[in-house]
Amino acid sequence: MEKVVKKVRQSNVELLRIFAIIIIIINHMALHTPWHVVRSVNNARLVTQWLGTGGRLGVNIFILISGYFLIKSTFKWRSLSKLWVQVWLYAVGIFFIFHHFTQLGQTISLNQLRISFLPIMFNQWWFITAYMIMYLFVPFMNKFAKALTQKEYRNFLLLFLVVGSAWPTIAPKISIYSDVIWMMFVYMIGGYIRLYPDFIKNLKTKTLLGLWAGVAALMLGSIQFMNWFNSLDANKFISMVRAIGISNTRFANAPMNPLSLILAVIIFAVFLRLPIPGNKLINGLAANVFGIYLLQSSSIGHKWLWDLVDAQRFTSGWKILIYSIGVGLVIFAVGSVIVALTNLITNPIEKLTFGKLDTYLKKRKVKSQLNQVEETK
Image (cartoon, rainbow, N blue to C red):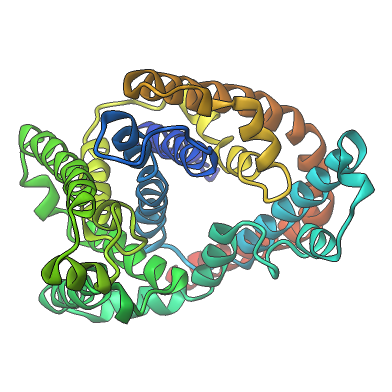
């Protein structure tokens, strides 16, 4: 009898997924809230700007996780198709709900129809569109990564870090940034950590935690420094620097910002060494992360959500920070319940759509394994 072992998700990585989606939720709140804070060097403004850095940090973490696990896997059309179906069901469901319960039904535009019924093609969720395009390149990236020596792989990543991250962050007007290309780069970093784990393992946990605090402080300090710099009266030097296009949060929130990437790698390394055994609660909550992302960042429903949150009524830095963390946790909790209820509808549809295909693929896999056994006899 062949012993079948069910794969158990690593709960330390699943906990990291939860952490990443919460900071993304907080980031969305910070970006979509019309804050009533004074545009000067003050704590309240600094907090709102700092909260706005969580989006790219969370995205980098998610792609690092993908690279870490997919670098040793094979490309699966089934996974891509399942993702497409789930996104489509959420997009259409959100459209009809808001059409029925809100005033959206009185003013349905062509744009609302196309992003709802063709959400990936028309970029309703930019992350999903970019991720699915990146996923198509996974088999090629994996072959490329495995063909390189460790030194060549490391040099490739360092070169891209300089040309595709540090340089366009400092001089944004010459940016060659692309969401897909950036994801491919971060994916390759995750793959490097999986293929050559020693450079992470050799670092002590205390060192990693110190680096986490140091890089986070550097990001925060860069925002505050630029707030101060942009408050100065203009002279030739200041005007020249401003003409480059460096904004207040450029070094902490730019899509290709190296500090955010480095911090994501450090956080990933810390969570990788957490001694958490298979935990059903963590794994179950982490399974809802994708659905929560779709719910809270829908281009149709996000305005209603952030109007409901009403965070702009706070003008104290500490109150904004505490309220934002609370909002992130509450939206995650409520979203988990909604996703669990939604799964009662979407899971049967997915099984109906892919059930026969799954059965065929499983039979084919078993047949292939039996053939390999016969050949080795």
